Image (cartoon, rainbow, N blue to C red; front, side):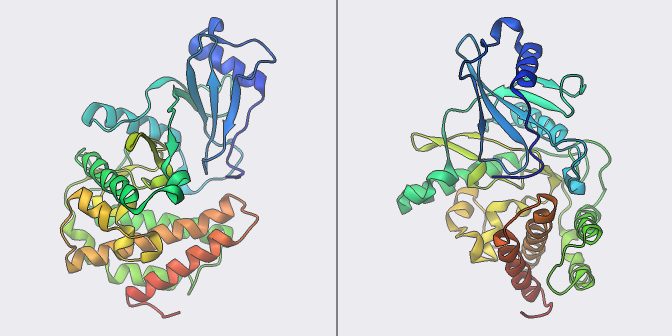
Length: 329
């Protein structure tokens, strides 16, 4: 996926980063096919690197400092590193091991880190080739993984590090407010306008008060961030959007209120979630609204040349607003 947030580096710069992380003896000779870009990501550039010892690792680099990102994406690499630490310390969910992280900007203009390379298939890339039973099995497994992640408690609602909020209502309203501010600042056109969205969210904010315990929320745990091999999940990747909040905000539940995000039956079965209450359904619709806003507004920040994602996400925003009692199409 192409995006202006991908901070591509020269071969020599990557060589210097490898030297700093693993030492000069692990740097391959010039001319060898030892580095290649992995193209599946949407935000950070990721390289697959073969060390001189033969080991394979992955290098992930944050966006360039002169490229504007959305408010919630600032410091995203620090969030990912903290998420990986939490997941390894508190769960058995498989994630890559961090070998080295550098935030000095001495050899690169942005944060970067090296991690173990996961030799497996991206679930999203193989989904079309799977039988229904296989797809359901993976969805159930993803539900179980998500539930385990959600067992990690947080000190407050909001970011994994730094200042949080004492209530989920305050944290979620801030998240939506930052999104709307990003969109307005960049002149992104949203269906029905920004004031209508603010009014609809405010009208249903009481439903957020039911959430009283901050829990780790991966949020971006869709099949594209799930690595599989031999019928099982072997790693979860891309943790830069994690926060402490309501587990119902996990992506796997999106389909419970919109079939456009897929059938959530197998996921919820694997998660062990009972049918949603009326208040939970309202919250999930608010979370679908938040998700659609992200998908609409990020197309401007990524400088997408096509309108496919924007058009699709605008339709999701319209349908969710209607479900929440807002304007119809």
